Amino acid sequence: MREIAISDVMLKQITKGSDYTLSFREKIEIAKLLDKLGLSVIELGEIVNTKVDSLLIKSVASAVTSSVIAVPVNIDGDDVDIVWNALREAKHPRLQVASPVSAVQMEYISHKKPDAMIKAVDSTIRKCAELCSDVEFIADDATRSDEAFLYEIIKTAITAGAKTVTVCDTAGKMLADEFDKFISDIYENVPALNDVRLGVSCSNALAMADSCAIAAIRRGAVEVMTTAVDMNLVSMANIAGIISAKGDSFDAKMSIKTTQLNRTLSQIVRMFTSNKENSPYDSGIRGSFEGITLSEHEDMASVMKVVEKLGYDLSEEDSVKVYEEFRKIASKKESVTSTELDAIIASNALQVPPTYKLDTYVINTGNNISAMAHLKISKNGEIKEGIAIGDGPIDAAFLAVAQVVGCRYELDDFQIRAVTEGHEAMGETIVKLRSEGKIYSGRGLSTDIVGSGILAYINALNKIVYEEETV
Image (cartoon, rainbow, N blue to C red):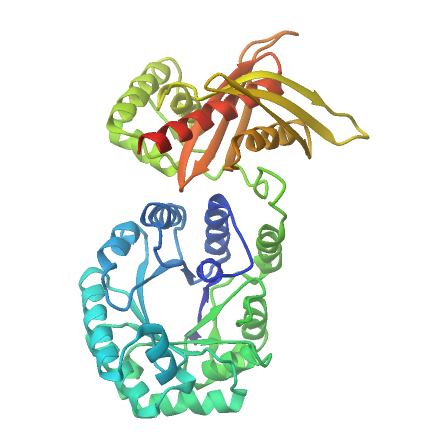
């Protein structure tokens, strides 16, 4: 029975002007959920901001164990090395070369004539194939292309080294029987297609995407681009349901764990639809790397690998400081957890002169009123005030800080623990903020948990501001 690969393009689509927004951490969590679900391919967006997007690809590659991670390169091939350097550590990497193949899109999107487009596809796929054994050619707007040209460019892609060819009904104007014939004609005119994998992508403009995808599978396609949320493409839930119920009748099965499907999709939909406009928090996901422990026998390279997994990009000087402190702590106990490593980094890495200092704060909260925070913060000696309402005292306090600063950074993690005992116990808070994809952690100590949280937030904020001003 044929194994049908289900790919998900959500994380790619949100980089193309989608109305949905996700935090850096949510993107990694979604990739992990899809991987656990048994999805065959997870597609990520192209690299636009080299620093941020490369870090995301590396983070997803580190977190995903079973699924193929697919990342597109430019049709001119000028970013192949950059993409590959970000993707190369993935367990199952794939480079994608997408090209418009209809006359209109070639002219207005790529500004290339047919002959130039074929040369670009040939050159770029060959370059990708030298680095990666899994290269995919994506023929955008294939259903509106000249048939002879489409067959020629697919042959060129296969000869150049493409192992998967995906044809797209970008306009979504075909009915199922028309798409069936379209796929049949490609197989008939491109015999070499029988030696590689054929994938399909269908727009849902006529609410026919799922039907067209099934028609293509029945005709021989073995890969389908889907989405877990509504993006006007093939529905992952629908395709998985059809293959699960009727796959035997058309010789098809899939690796998706159907028993976990609804629960996983609900989690993903919540992340896509949660309101992030008025809160520094993301969807509440925490502890992506909880469970990691290190012993005193770890060398510096091993410790720094975990530091990188946690999202930090430390300088050589800070790496040495963190490792030395790690060794001191590890020598006194059996193991050091990732949470403790966060605290070590917050206390030892990127210690900077404070641009912002907490002057005073007042928090009003109760069981029948919204939490309100009034903060006075000095910036280079000048007092600034922030007043905000939030979903709890910490939320309100962080919003008030953001109001003073005039910029809200993504809150990646928030950890609280007691460091002393008794009625006047000291509380330690670690706050991790993300800016330009990079993690900055701050540490705060106080007998008041809210106060320690504000101090930790400002400590992390000062590190961001210092680095931005010195770049």
